[in-house]
Each structure stands twice: as C-alpha cells, then as structure tokens.
Length: 226
Length: 267
Ligand SMILES: Nc1ncnc2c1ncn2[C@@H]1O[C@H](COP(=O)(O)OP(=O)(O)O)[C@@H](O)[C@H]1O
Ligand SMILES: [Mg+2]
Image 1 (cartoon, each protein chain N blue to C red):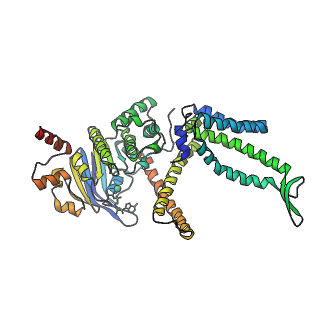
Image 2: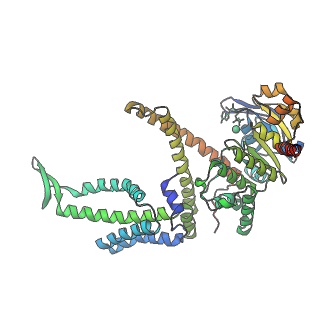
Image 3: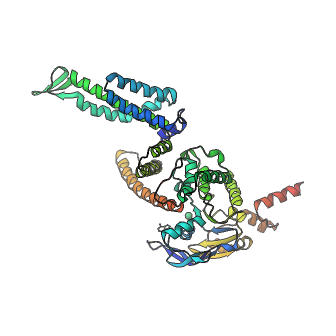
C-alpha cells in the first residue's frame, strides 16, 4: 500500500475535521500568492512542516524522503531560471567564444524566490494528503457541491492506483525472483514485459470491477452517506 | 428457488466451459458444487448471475426464466447475489462502512436503516471490530469477511460463494465455516469449492463438476462413496469418509459430530 495512505490513516490529526484541513491547505496555497511576500512564504513552509512533523507526528525521515521526488523536479526547473546567458553582474560565469553563461545576482534571487514559493504550496498540499484520508477529502468535496463526475473520477482513480501499484509490484517481484534484473540488457527486456503484462492485467481487473459494480447494483453514481 | 436447465456455455475463444448443466436449489439448503481448478465453477456462477449469457439452455428463478435486460437483472440481483473468489474484486471504498453500505445506497435505502443493516452484516461475519480500519490494512481473510458482509447486507434469498475458503489458514477456514453455517439459516447458499472437508461438513446436496459437465449429484454420503467419479473429477474424499472406509467406523456427518463422539468415549 502507499506510504502516503498509511500516514493519512494513522496520523494524530486524522480525526480532525477534514473541512478545516482542506481550508488550511488551500489557504497555504492561496494566501501567499495574494500577499506575495517572501517572508510569508517562508512562514507557510515552517508552519506546514510544524503541523505535519510536530503535531501529526509524521516521521521526519519519511517526510523528507517523500519531498525528495518533487524537490528534484523543482530544482531541475529552477536551474534553467538561475542560469542566464549574456546577463549583467555575474556572480560566476564562464565564456564560450563570446557568449557568457553563468549566474547573476538577479537570476539567483529570482530562482530562490520561485523555489520558496513553490515549496510553500508543496508543503501545503503535503499537509493535506498526509493528514487526511482520501474518503474524508471526497466527503468534504461532496459537501462543497463539487460535481459528481469529478468525485467519481477521484474514487475510481484512487482505487485504480492501488490495483496498478499492486499488480506492478507482483510482476516485478516475480521477475526478480527469476533473475529478471541481473544485467542491463535483461532488465530492459523485463521492464518491457512488465509494462505489457501490466496493461493486460489492468484491463482484466477493470472488467472484473465492472462485473462486481453491477452485482452491487451500481447505477452510475458513487453514493456517499453524510 | 433457482433452476439451471440444460445450460451450455462457450467462451469467445472456443473453450466449451459448460455442457448440459442441470441444477436445482430446492434439493438442499446449502448446495455444494465441487470440481477441480478449471472445471467451470466460476463460469457457472457467472451464468447464474446473468453476467454471462448461456449459448443454450436457461436459468429460472421462481419458475420465471431470466431476462437479459438491465432493469430485470438489477431486480434479480437483489434476490440472487454472489461473493467472488478474490475479495479485492468486490471492494471499492477504502473505508469498510462505506463499502458495505454501497449496495444499499444504490438501492436508495435511508441512512438510519443502512447503519443498522451494516452493523448487522458485520456482526454476522464477526467483523464489527474492524469497522474503523481502512480496507487496504486488512489481511486476506479479513477482506474476505468484509466482502461477504458487503453482499449479505442486500439480504438476497440466494447467495453464491465462489471458493470461500481458498487461501485461508485453518483457523480462518473454521471461522468461515461457522459464518456460512450461521447465514445458511436465513437463505439458500450455493458454494463452489475443491476443499472436500469443507463441502462435506456444511453442504447437504452436492454436484460434482468435471470438465464442464455434471457427472454426479446427490446427498453427501452418496456422492462421496463414488470412487470412480471422484477420481474422474480429480478430487479426493473428505477425511471423515476416508477414516470411515479404512477403519470401518461410524460415518460422521460433520467434524462436530466426530469431536463430540470422541469426548463421550473418553469420559
Ligand atoms: N475469459 C475466459 N475466456 C476463455 N476461457 C475461459 C475464460 N475464463 C475461464 N475460461 C476457461 O473456462 C474453463 C472453466 O474455468 P473456470 O470457470 O474459471 O473454472 P473454475 O472456477 O472451476 O476453476 C477453464 O478451462 C478456463 O480455462
Ligand atoms: Mg474459479
């Protein structure tokens, strides 16, 4: 099962009202954009981290581990902003023929700001998904009159993610047991096989799911009580 | 009362999965369908549920033949429903209560009654203490019980169980047996399985399925004395029957009878 999901169901804030958590999280994304103040962004990051680590008691290690993936994408994209060509006031640069490539004070400042801004939104989203079980989020969205179609999509996608990960995991395990990832060439072939298998298996599972939905008298709308 | 009459089913790829199947639920309260892997048990169940449409033959419920339109099948599924072999196939929500309530909400039952029925169903499968757990935290056996509860809430009069004990440990198997015994007091149950001990213990009428055909049927004592047919179906005898034949002792009707007899003798 997903690590994120495990924390969502076991953290100390799981019984806290989902509406409040959704508001906080949305606030953490929207308010810094409105105020547009560098220090407020920093404050949001610290605030969210304290909520997640200090109050909800998500282990520090896993929190940072989970942040690494989006952070690496973020850093990569920030790089393209920080590095500027033929600018002024270089802090550091090198020259290729008559083109200057390097970092200027201005670009560095711009990059840092953007980084902090994105990070503040990221920590806000993480706060929500790490402290709120998906069903609570869906229930709250339903109360907020979000269209049914979107909610159904969420329920199904959520369920499908589990089916997908589980199947991929099963196939991968079976392959490693048969030495399917010994060297690069074999690993490549195994990966291709995994993807092909995954596709057919997910297709079969999808069919099975339709059958059992019918058995449970599903009529085209996922209903949730109040 | 459910009847299957001269039913044939062939998959698109040409596999003749069922040949001339006749079945009648009025013959018993707990009906067993035994057969090796691939003998056609699941295919038969899917036909009975109206999910697969037979190539020939018919299924009648209370003497009315099944009609293959959406509205009719929907009403039919309130009367006849099924627990699949793989519990994951039947669980959609990550929350147990919502999952069990799912079919009731689809029927438009009010929330108060839903609460009552869900609790009742959970009690029947001994899983009331699990209600607050997210479904992906459950063990396989627990999932199986929740899947059963999810179908029990519909209060159908006929319940199909596809291999209810496959993949369960001995303790869970015993619990499953008790659960089936308990729910059989209020409805007709059809069980498919290749667990002979289970079938011998809880069924009162048995069909032997082999390569898509029913090769024998009858009360359990009769069916399990047919060496040749059991062999043909790649099945073995329940241990109670084997002991009876080998040592010429009494043929006990179920494990409970056997155990209580032992105790009396020792005392
Ligand atoms: N979707 C399918 N397409 C083609 N053949 C199938 C399909 N499902 C099952 N079969 C075949 O039908 C036969 C009966 O299968 P099944 O009903 O699953 O048996 P059981 O449940 O008794 O193990 C087997 O020979 C199997 O290979
Ligand atoms: Mg089967």
